[in-house]
Amino acid sequence: MGHIVLNQITKRFGDVEVIPPLDLTIEDGEFTVFVGPSGCGKSTLLRLIAGLEDVSSGQIQIDGQDATEVPPAKRGLAMVFQSYALYPHMSVRKNIAFPLRMAKLEKAEQDKRVEQAAAVLNLTDYLDRRPGQLSGGQRQRVAIGRAIVREPAAFLFDEPLSNLDAALRVGMRLEISELHERLKTTMIYVTHDQVEAMTMADKIVVLKAGNIEQVGSPLDLYKAPRNLFVAGFIGSPKMNFITGAEAKKHDAQTIGIRPEHIAVSKEGGLWEGVIGVSEHLGSDTFFHVHQTGLADTITVRAGGEVNFHHGDRIFLTPRDDVLHRFDMQGLRIA
Ligand SMILES: Nc1ncnc2c1ncn2[C@@H]1O[C@H](COP(=O)(O)OP(=O)(O)O)[C@@H](O)[C@H]1O
Ligand SMILES: [Mg+2]
Image (cartoon, rainbow, N blue to C red):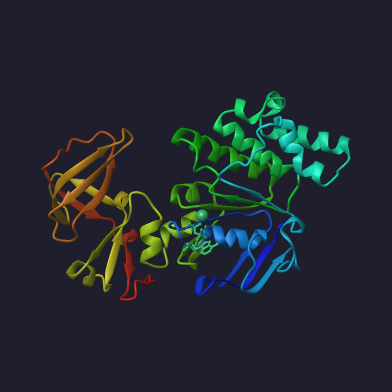
């Protein structure tokens, strides 16, 4: 079980309200990602759920019980941090078993749970090593193992992959997703990286200055961002925003069009511009197009092998069916 309800919770540090009244429901078994820029309150929100911080007001329910005043160790949640916080002098086995030893679980049960967690995490061959003899990815798995053995109602991850290099991050991302598939336990995962959010989440919660800007599946957010902030935050490269006369044609203050929704041609198209910087990724090419009279730069995605060059005059045609419209307040027009 791991059904979590936040009911009008707030958090103040002194006079500063970091989390204004906030409501959120996390379903049992769901993989929820809190995403937003640095300082938006992701860690604070997670720590409130974990009980590592007290709420200033409001209520936290875990599996139907009021957990607002329940101390962290009794909430049945397990937190995995960015810094793995492993004990360097202990073997992997002892590190993983640590919370069970603290809870004075029977030795046989301890051994069983450690073996199971190690099997799930491919750590069986490393149980007698010390953390110093492991790679960064393996250490992260040990930290997760220590959480798994507690059989928590939910796992809470705070930017667990930020210390890893790019290739390892992609690998661990998949491992955590697979772990979720296998365990089917509620997971709440904090990241500032929208790609992690998009690739891992069942449900994304986009935060800005402690406010929930939107909650939805990755594709909900991609297809129908509720406002300009979400529109600009989700998707890479970023959505293009156009104001002025071109937006007025669509009865909007601002129109948004994603780079992958603009066709590029040598001649004959709706907008005209000049290619500035090109980014060749092999699979794709991103062109940064200037002098369109619409915005400083319009970014477009083309195929991997395209025959356009810096300084070329090109034509752009946006797909009307996936054009986003926003009003004066920056809110989506349905
Ligand atoms: N213990 C604290 N005392 C005072 N301010 C804090 C404390 N912890 C966090 N904050 C402030 O709360 C805001 C949100 O921080 P945090 O939750 O760490 O953001 P994020 O994890 O999204 O980067 C920031 O402005 C931060 O400075
Ligand atoms: Mg943080």
